[in-house]
Image (cartoon, rainbow, N blue to C red; front, side, top):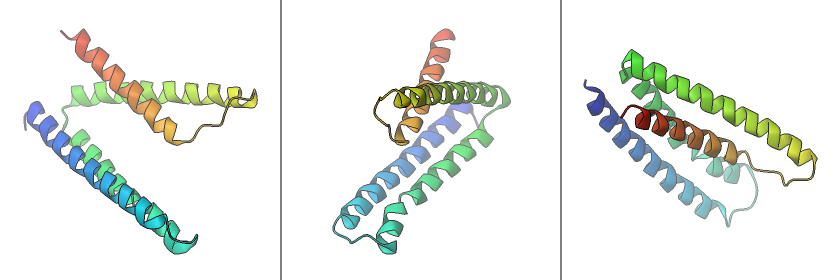
Length: 128
């Protein structure tokens, strides 16, 4: 399979799993809002983890489709993004000790995704 065909297939699969995630997320939040606290509400609020699992499966499939060079470059970017995110998380943890507001763990993926995407964009610009 050509790299661009694999990338296109990946984009469609990831977009589909992303749409499924959003539908399940908003559905679970809407249904859980009027419910009393308990095991059923907790289980309902965890249902978005199912399409997240689908996203993980799509990403793993894409890595198997990549040729070795693209896989290596992508994993390098991911490793750098993870290191930058760890550094920022630890640094902000010290700032929380100084009175800064506590941040949700949801920010960790946002930061890592932004750094990873930024690195990939810089690499693409460097290849021109």
